[in-house]
Image (cartoon, rainbow, N blue to C red; front, side):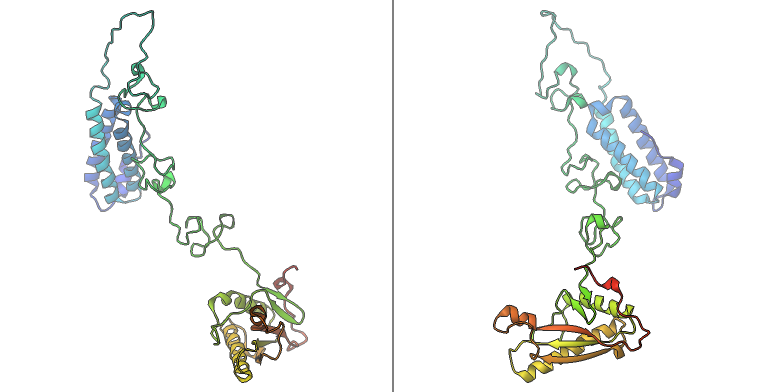
Length: 335
């Protein structure tokens, strides 16, 4: 195992005295070396792996100046290393087995039924793969390739460089915050964690056509949040063409009195105008007018028709100055 420069690691560490860390680190390194000499990786593989892994983690924490965390890893590594030393006391001993000759064949007894014969099985009472000489491997419940004994999050998959734990993902879109260009807005991985931009308006010669209706609180003039995006796109288009004027038209269905609907449509048109003003559009470039139920675009005899009639429209008026540009073409999407 390649070791990190101990002197540098301890020098960078904080919270725990460098002397204490140095002494504990030397002690753990000594125990690990003894266990390795006694072939603990074969006789006590779990404790050996835990000791070496936590010693590596301690080096990492010390190099980052996290003394308390390094000390905790060293404590775990020391316990496991000493257990590995105790369990591997007789690991290097050579035992001579005298077998009676029987047709020149060697017994293929497999006590634990793991497919590795006892004569070659270092753990004949515990099943394990042949690749580990018949000894069991540590489990990996989350199947992230990091065994449970060194996995800080054994039930949740994560990369090795984060100790088996997933990286933080505030918007829960499956893209870790470290790689997410929009960590507070969910979006697909192929778009770097950012939501795909949706074009909700089409600029025509005489109007700004909305692909999504503007929604209000029922029978009120409060604009609902799900309409903010389309109105922000309208504001952007108007700011990109500062010489264009628009008329904001409010329309309703025919449910209720005509007088009530005329006033409601006017309040809603005014509310949209104020929203655009807050987005930076000059108030002088907009007029708001309510038409109530006088200009239906669908029959008011069914729910779908009445829903279509409750709308806001944007009509482009003559430019303030002939020199001012019309609305730019980039706000128009292909049909």
